[in-house]
Figure 1 (cartoon, rainbow, N blue to C red):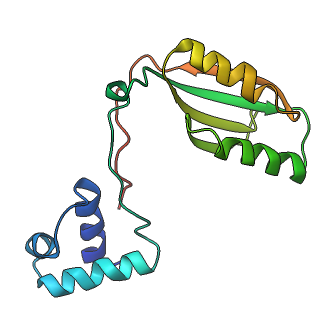
Figure 2 (tube, helix red, strand yellow):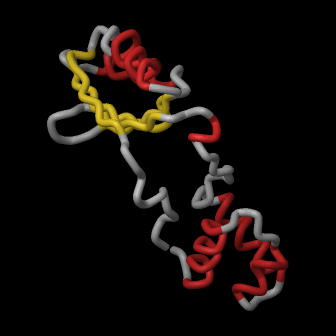
Length: 151
């Protein structure tokens, strides 16, 4: 169970993962060694799963962000595993979820341009034997950036 100090530590690290133990200690009002041990425990418990850098997709030439709903025509463990393997091979698919409702999967994709998105849909996704149809939505603007998890 997380205590108040753990949740404050997690909130601070979600804002700035580069905080040193000393900087954390100042925010949490404890010694640097205590703050460091708490961070290590949260890492060991898998609550902190890693640290990443947030990149600007447009500055990387990824001018199209989209969401793609994938509908399978054939269900079963073999088809699901095969489709999951396909998703893992495609760098432009940055996240994927299995869903309730009409669509089986929701994919978040970043592509260079619309022709690249079109190729991903028609030459990759629709060619998978289990996929019956896809529905894509192109992001016009992201009004709220991916934020920290509530703690």
